[in-house]
Every structure is written in structure tokens, then in C-alpha cells.
Length: 397
Ligand SMILES: Cc1cc2nc3c(=O)[nH]c(=O)nc-3n(C[C@H](O)[C@H](O)[C@H](O)COP(=O)(O)OP(=O)(O)OC[C@H]3O[C@@H](n4cnc5c(N)ncnc54)[C@H](O)[C@@H]3O)c2cc1C
Image 1 (tube, protein in one colour):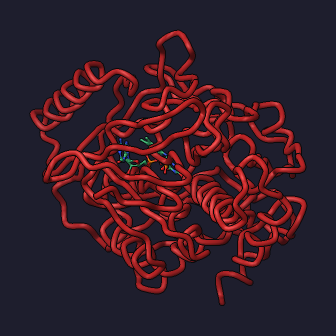
Image 2: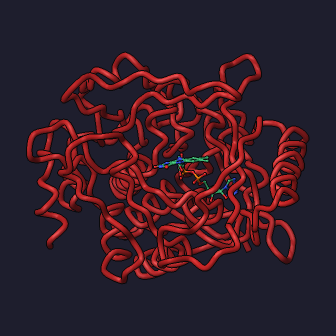
């Protein structure tokens, strides 16, 4: 039996989670395919439990630039005692002071809740392993299940795998790393063998860096072995470590070619386009092996925005992407990959996909103004459409 959906989202990280909730809440038949048994991606499974950045600290008063499903998730965690939300109005010292730390176990549980409440069909522990296409249409995907390979059909597909796996299996164009084989280092998170002081802050806050090319499985295998060796050596020197994440967390993967490509000049100057669909806030931050990060800051009081057209595939008319595999140059990708931005992108593509299905339109033809209207109705902050918001207003709700 082939399962038929309106939209299939591959990858249940911050982007895929929000895309699935947004699409399913609009009443279309939505499936979410995830290779691990747990949602959350880098936030939960791979152990980086900090969510940046819902605010632009340099705006006056109305500093919150992202809300919507991402913020709803954070507030649910906060109210249950599993998120530490800093004062978003605090005077700027550095960007990471505004990171929201969450307990990864509780975060995965709240994601499960929000996904099941909104009616998403979940395929956990079932990676997408192949894609069948005809000309510029994706017809179906193959997932690996406990009982063998299974075919899933859908009208639309959204690649939220971070590494751009769905799109690359389909044969879509992509860029990766610096284009000459160099990639930002990945990090294998490990958890110190100490009693956590509280539920949130002492979890997984040590790291090791290693060269990581996610487009090459043999290279990934080598990086995994190298990372574990580095941690083991640290243990031999006395570090007390009890657990590691199941994989090295990648900072960058494939950037799938979209109808447009986000570039650093537009990003840093906060340039707005008709199809700018959500905001993002982080500086250009390319991590390097054995030298300081390459950094470029955003123009003062400007807020970068992400275009919907950078999330629509150039090669396939029924493929979109969100999260760190969106169409962008390397510099921009190093900024817009932060988790709150991934969440905002996810909600935007999930909404656009649902509108396309409901109005029987190609995704490239969906009226952007209508997508913006629906996003705003669902508490998203939309460039050139709604205003940014005061922190107190959405924190004390
Ligand atoms: C070491 C490190 C530190 C970071 N620090 C911060 C920080 O402090 N603050 C911050 O905001 N951001 C930080 N980031 C960036 C941020 O965590 C990521 O860019 C963001 O989480 C990406 O979200 P995503 O949903 O696009 O991808 P991911 O979180 O990578 O999710 C992708 C999902 O797709 C799944 N998947 C992959 N392939 C397949 C397949 N074939 N089939 C099915 N599922 C698949 C994966 O298992 C995963 O669940 C950090 C990143 C790293 C690596």
C-alpha cells in the first residue's frame, strides 16, 4: 500500500517540526519523516540545547522579531519549567546572552505533543533513502522502515533534513561548504558525569570540533571516529564523561538551489523584498578549524529577512526547503542557520505549502500576500506586514 499525503516533510529538526505543525494545523494531510526516533535534530538529539535568536537587541522597544510556533514551543517548555528565557530587553553584551536554553528531553516531548495534537502522521526512525522523480516533479520517496523499504507519495515535499538529503537524492542543484571541499567543523557533544544542578543549564555544554563533510559518508565515518578518539583522550586525562550524542553535529551541509539565493550583502543590510517572509537574527559566523571564526556584523538597527523564493527549489516544482539547507551563500547560511530562524522558516514553508495544496496552485505561484496574512493570523512576525513585538507582551501572556 502506498501512503498518499498532501505534504511530506523530511527531517524533524527545528525547521521540520514547525513546518509540519503549520501545515497540519491548516488541515492538509501532513507526514513528517525523521531518521532518528526523536524529533528536534541538533536541538535535542545532537545536544546543542540553545535557541538563538528571537530578538534583535538593537531595535527600540519592540525587539522580538520571531514569534509563531517557535515561540509557542518555547513558552510551553518555559511554563513546564524546562526552558530558561533570558531578558530580551537586557543591554547587549554579546549575542549568546539571548540564547534560550532548554532541556532536550522535555523539548522532544513537547515537540511530540505539538505534532500529535496537530494531527501530523509521524514516521520516526525511518530515514528517507531515495526519491523517484519525473522531469521536474518529485513523485514519491522511499523510507527505510523496520519491515523494509516503503514508498510514500505526496503532492508537495519539504526538505528540512539540514543536510539537504531529500533534494540531493532527487538530483537538485546544491552548493556545499566553501565549494572547494572545506567545511565548517562539526561538534560531538558529550555530557559530563556530574549531577546537573538544574534541569536545563548543565546539560551537554562541552564540545569537541572536527572536520566534517556531510556530503560524503566515508568522510563522516572518519570524523565520528576522530571525535570519539578526542573525547576518549580527554577522559584519559581525567575528564568525567558518561554519554555522547549519537553523531557529530554539522554546522553546514548542502545549500539547495532555490528560485533566489540569499546573499550576505542583502542579509546584513536588512534588505526587504516583496517575498521576505520571516526575520532572522545572527551575525555572519563561519567557524574554522584551528583559527577564530570569520565574522561580519549586521548593520546597526537592521533586521535581516529571509525570502520565500529562497525556500522554493529551482529544479523541482513541488519541492521546498527550510532550515539550514535553504538557498543561500555560505556567509548568509552561517547566520540564518540559528534555531529561531529555522523555526520561522519552517512555519513559513509549512504555511505556503498548505495554501498551495488548498488552492491547487504550484508553490511558486502561491500569492505571497496571502501566505503573509495567514502567518500573521498565526502569531508569526512578518516583514513588511506586521510589526515587531515587545518582549513583555509575549512573555507575560
Ligand atoms: C555544534 C553546533 C552548535 C550550535 N550552536 C547553536 C546555538 O548556540 N544556537 C543556535 O540557535 N543555533 C546553534 N547551532 C545551529 C543550529 O543548531 C542548527 O543550524 C539548527 O538546529 C538547524 O535546524 P534544522 O532543522 O535546519 O536542521 P537539524 O536540526 O539538523 O534537523 C534536521 C533533521 O533531519 C533529520 N534527517 C537528516 N537526514 C535525514 C534523512 N535522510 N531522512 C530523515 N530525516 C533526516 C535529522 O536527523 C534531523 O533531525 C549550532 C549548530 C552546531 C552544529
